[in-house]
Image (cartoon, rainbow, N blue to C red; front, side, top):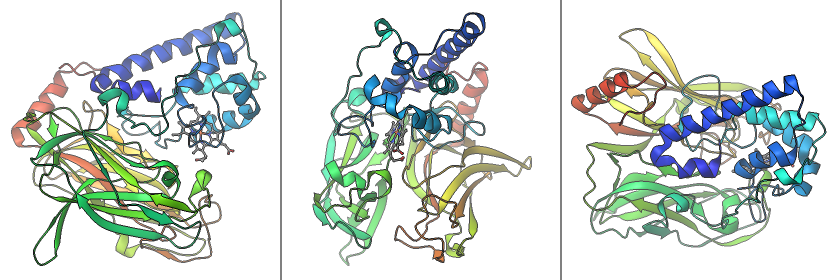
Length: 453
Ligand code: HEC
C-alpha cells in the first residue's frame, strides 16, 4: 500500500483500498503472464522506482528517519540486496502485522502488496538493472519532514499543544516528565484526528508521550481521561466518521513523557538533546457535529502483575475484558518494551464457544508502535457477554535482537529495560438499536465487504 496515497483516501478508505488492491492484483497477473510468454526484465525505471517512491522515501530521504536515502537509482542500487531481504521478510516498510491471519482491512496500512514484494525480489535476483530511462516515473514529491502527518488530508491541526521543553542527556537512565499545560478549549468538541509529534531530534529519544484531559480538584487530586497515546514510530489516530471522541473543555492537559537518553534502535543519536518538546496536534470536527456514538481510548491490562521473565527464558500474558453493552473495536495497539515480541487480539463468543482471531502481530518490536485502525466496515463488533482476549509474548533469550541483556530477570516496570503488558484500544460504545443497525447494514453489504452507504 502507498502510505501517502493511503492516508489521503481515508474518508473513502473502504473503497480506496479495495480499488488499489484490485489494480495491484491485476498488475501482478499481467507481469506474471508476461514473464511466462516473453520474459520482460524487471527494472528500476519500469517497475521498482514507483514502489520505492510511494512506500519508502517518506522516511528514506534527506532529513528523514531512515538511515539512508532511497530517492533515486544511484542511492537505491548499493542497498539492493538488503532491500530485497527486508522487503521479502516484511520488515520494511516497518509495519508488523500478520498478513495471513485476522482482519486485513486496516486504515493507514504501510504493508506492501504481495506483488510489489515479488517485483522487488525478482528485480534484485535479475541484477537490479536501471532499465529504460523513458519509463522512469517523476521524482517523488517530498513533504517537509516536520509536517503533520494528516496535513494533506485535513490541513493544519485546529489545536497544537506543546509540552514544556526538557533537556535530555546523551546517555544514562530513563527519564520521565509529568506536567500540566493549559487545554485551550472553551467548549467540548468532537475530535477528528490526533497526532503526537516530538519536535526535530526529540523523536529518537521519546519512548512514549501520553496526554490526558486532567481536572485538578481543590485537594490536589487529579481526575484524568486519555487524549491519546504516542510511542516511538506511531503515525497518529483517526476517529471513524459518525463517532464522537470528546475533547473536553476547561481541563488542563497533562503530559506524561518517557525519554530514553541516547535513543533507541537504528536512529539512536547518542547525543544531548536540548529543549526537547513534544507537540499534540488535534483536528476537530465543526461545532455541533452530530454523532450518535461515543468513542474512548483506554488501556486494557493483561496479567502484568504476574509478568516475570527468567534469564534466557520466555513468558506470555493474557487479559480478558467484557462489556455490559455492545461495542465496536476501532483500533488496537499493544504495548510492551524490549523483550516483547508478539501480540494478538481475539474475541471469545460464549454463545457458540468459538474464538476468533482479530489481529496477530507475530514480529512485534518496540521500535515501531502502531495503532492498527480497523476499516469501519469490518471493525469487530462485540455483543454483550463476548470476551475480548489480549495476549502478549516475551522473549528474554539472546535470539531476540532487541534484548539488551538476556542474563537479567525482567518484571513489570516503567523503565525501557523493564517490561509492560497492556493494550491501547479505541472502543465505540453502542446502544442496542445502533448495534442492530450496524449488523443489518453489514448483512446487506455485498460479499466483497464494500460499504453501501
Ligand atoms: C516509517 C519510516 C520508514 C519507511 C516507510 C521505510 N523505512 Fe526502511 N528504515 C526506517 C528506519 C528508521 C530504519 C532503521 C531502523 C530499523 O531498521 O527499524 C530502516 C531500515 C531500513 C533498511 C536496513 C538498513 C540497515 O542498514 O540495516 C532497509 C534496507 C530499508 N529500511 C529499506 C526500506 C524500504 C525498501 C522501504 C520501502 C519498501 C522502507 N525501508 C520503508 C524507516 C522506514
